[in-house]
Length: 267
Image (cartoon, rainbow, N blue to C red):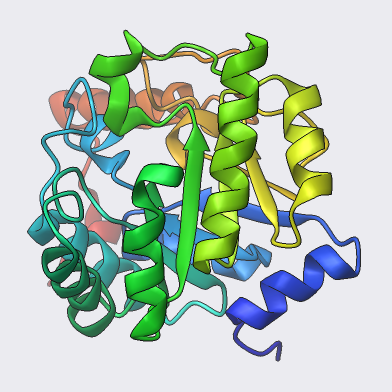
């Protein structure tokens, strides 16, 4: 039986040149499946707001909702390292608020680490959390909580000055104590440059093949999210078609009186 992965295990994977596989998860059954497959990291993402709750963005997601989803995932007792997103406005107000909310995700949710969007601007927050022994994954490049400033889900770092700022962000979050950094929606050459410039693992999403690991949204790889179809997503199965076929068959059985049968009834 494999042991539970820790922050140190994830960092060692970069040193050993071993790729890190990460997926989002929001509930108990998917957590059991993923962990049974040997996933390295589980992200309880605020993307739950889009793919589970049906919001257009991640901005409405609350702390209580993130704690709820984290608890559900942790009931599967995963061996994967579980990281939870800090939702919008849970860490931007002040350091005390950020510490309090991050602590709730660890204490009440059961997560092993938190993820924060931003670079140079949130380095003081990362440092403050690390000082009280809360491990932090940083998230730079395309940061969904900044959608209004960015004007939508657009690739970041195409211009030279923008690329330099993102590299500066990467160095800043590393210096602040983040143990890993998610690179989202940036050119692959920039992701490669960052990966070679920092000692902490880089985990890409729409950042090309040169990162130390990859993360995707589980609903995207299963074909269960119709809101968006980003270029960087690879759909591994059309689960929507499978579920639709099962539901249609059930409706037909009920309407035709072929379910339930004696096999599914009590005497």
